[in-house]
Image 1 (cartoon, one colour):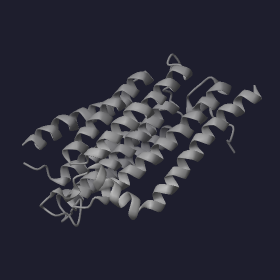
Image 2: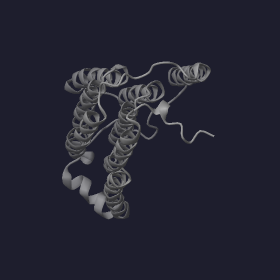
Image 3: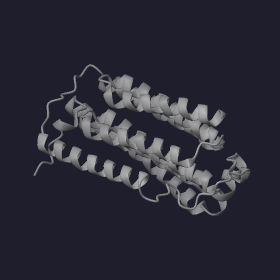
Image 4: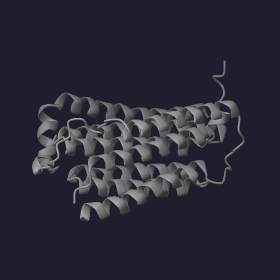
Length: 173
Length: 101
């Protein structure tokens, strides 16, 4: 019962935030909408026992990434009016038609056909997936240790790349 | 009451769709970037839900890696946007046509 109520409330909140991201004219409002969506999705993680991932989602996304976004919005400026003039009207109609076909097909397959969203899903959800730090760390540092090292390297390269991009501009101008 | 995994999948699909629509409709590079984050979050939600439905902790581990890659992507992407903005004083992707053939 609790999960049902939380799903409805947080689902509506996440969808509202997502729509705000797309619709809002001011990028600040878009960032705030994204923040709301991130928090709602984090609550849905907690509901599904992914405690550590929810905490990391709040710390990394809502903390670091959104702060970075807001910084850049302040730098780039929010007063620039976005042009809404259509440059490719025919392409937009084509994409819309294609998207409508895909959505209708997906709906028909889901409703009519014998379709499972998650094929091997078990009906009983036990506590073996309780996402504590220990439960996440064990596969992370045994099965996925190579991928873990690779992401560490990736983060280092990304940080160095960001510094190089900033330095490069200063020398040019 | 346990919410069936289908509902989570449908919610994630709706979030992904909104993100993709924003990617197609908006011109502001920053807003397009936020739409990418939206789509990544929708995928993360599917991984968590499927992981729970299949009783597999590896879904949460995969979300962990996606979070790291998304953070790296945001760092580089925003650096590029700032670098472009310093030269062009605009965040609209329609004005970036130097590579037009």
